[in-house]
Length: 213
Image (cartoon, rainbow, N blue to C red; front, side, top):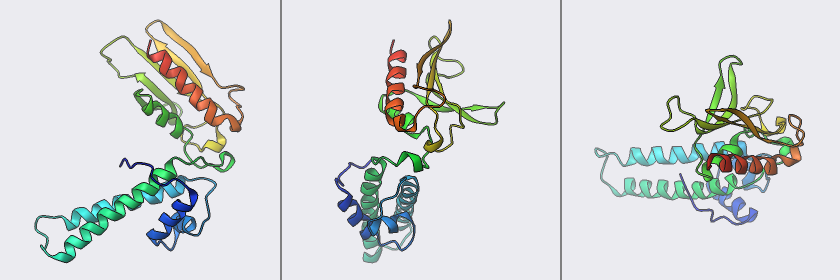
């Protein structure tokens, strides 16, 4: 659900969370002014609330449901709730976590930036390791329409691990002629956590440039 970022301050976000009137969970913590070190759990709860609001609206909008004012009121309330939660969700998604405490998946920002750059991407899984171990960007299908040209972005840990365990990105361009390393984070695979955002953006810029050639 794409919602414009209309909440422009922490105070507005706290007020929005308070209007949701939740007694427990990350939303309740935000409602009393407690900003989390990591916004992952808050995003999860808000995403769940959005789905619940849409599901309730769909139930109220069933063709064989009663045609009365209370049901119409319920539909309007669910529409307003989904909008309000969506606005708060958009604000939360734009916030940066405290990296040392961040529980977000390490590949979340990378994949988001790739999508914004209009670069096709997906998670790569290693049968040998038994886990997700990279992000594939570009034309990585088994039988692409054109020449093989994609980038494999990986790092030393499980790609599903949290940001706080990140060790830096390495990007390798794969073409018909071979494999070429096009980006390596400083000090990889033991890159400084403080450079996570800048290294991720630099990696995406390099990947996008390589695939545009």
